[in-house]
Amino acid sequence: MSKRRTIYKGFNKRRKNRIIKIYIIGASICLICGYGFMQFKNSKIFNSIKENVASIELKLPFFNSKKSDNNRLETFEYNDISKEIDEIKKENDEVNEDVKVATVKGWNVYTIQVASVEDKNEISEIEAVLSKEKVPFSTIEIDGVNKVQTYVSFDKESIRNYLESIRTLYPDAFLAEVKMPVLSLEYTSKYSYLETISEQLSSLIDNFELESKLWTNSKDNLNLKEYNTILTNRKTMVENIEKEVEQIDYEGADVFKSNLITYLNNVDKNIEEASKSANEQKYNISEGIFLNNLQGYLAFINSI
Image (tube, rainbow, N blue to C red; front, side, top):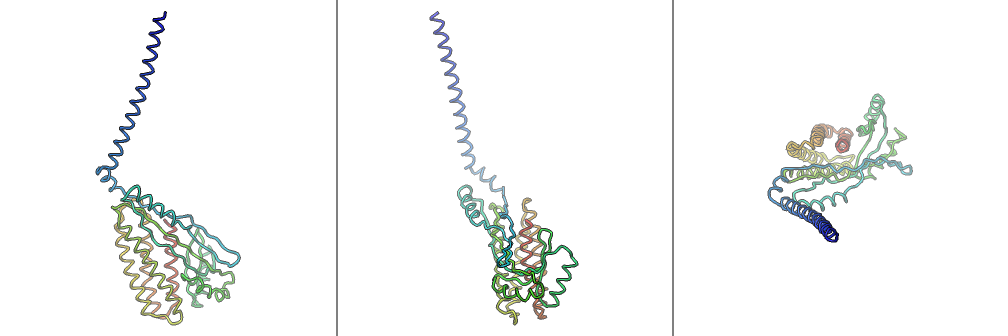
């Protein structure tokens, strides 16, 4: 009886040892697999695969429209995400040296909105009045509603100066602020041309700002030589951006590519018309075209 108990005790002991061995073997396999994966990840083979994979990510924040009752300033804005972009850059540097983030500078502009309507006939009537009064204008559609806007500048006060005169035509006119954030494009080394595109788009915005200052400083006596130089430089910029955009062959960026080309084509078409109108001293038309260019950028951002 005592012997039988001893045998059972030995059997139970061996069974416990077997379970322990199974745990040890399982843990060892996990460690070996984990180590092997880390070695593969750091190997040239993995890096070679990684170089052939690219991602383009448009970091666009939520669009907001708000209106202040105190100063009647309506703001169209995308929340600032510069901090998030810095974090992305930091994470990319730590995790993957090949992943980079190209950025397009953010900017703010100011305009006067005279109407927000859906009826196309009403829009035509408003535009006819503004044309007769030689007031620069352009219309943009936002969320299915057409917003007729006049004048535009990177400087708020220069636009505010026109507000009272516009209100003699449209008493409900108000100052509107458009806030555009930093736009970021995440990419790998294979798609490095996105960095060039982002730099050129930032330069295009700088070019718009130069025109804005020109309209502010020489409204009654436009410096045609300086104005035409700005337009000539813009045309070169647009052509260079288009060449880079044509290189995009990443399926995930089809919408970005298509809509950017559409926007650039419109800017290019506007250059000739703006120059022609300015040389004929139809400054209100040229300035309206400038407003259209900035509205077009907003529409482009909104479309992606």
